[in-house]
Length: 221
Image (cartoon, rainbow, N blue to C red; front, top):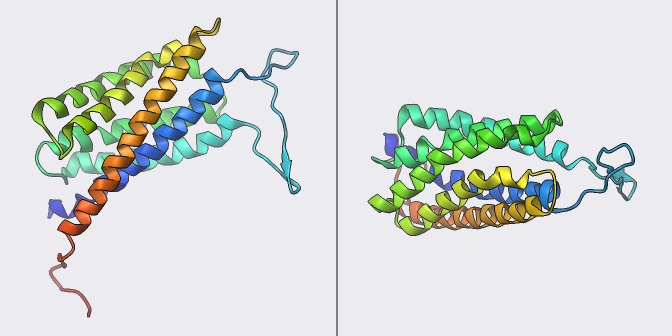
């Protein structure tokens, strides 16, 4: 019965791609683009109106709702998967057990952004969370997991490396932070593109595999 849930991985990968590319946008807005600074030292936000509707002027506040929602979903489904092990064999180690880690980091990031706390407080935890991500990436490559082990491993390694060096993007002085931020942004985008590619490919593959499956009570004709 566990195999009935294998297709969950497809949407997980596509959600991962969406989240990583959105995170790259957040890195750009916070650490690469130079924000306009008000005279009191705070960030000045520009209010824009389109057809009489005020645009959202606080990027982090808006993105926080996205990261909180994704974090809750990934953490809940990841804990379920870690308990039930719905995927075949070792795939549960590198995917089912890794998914709640992604949910936890997304939730932490979303809550921090929502309360307008300094993102630098998350620098150390995010860097340390890169360790299991990198380990899983190496493990996938070593044992040839998935039909595309090189791409799957690269997805993990790009993401893990971006997390590991992310504290460098938060350096408050000079252009070093901007350069590291640009590198983090590029790694997140590459990892997100790979997540999309693997997830979309798996969708078509799994759809074909399960095309003739029917529940024990049959299907209505």
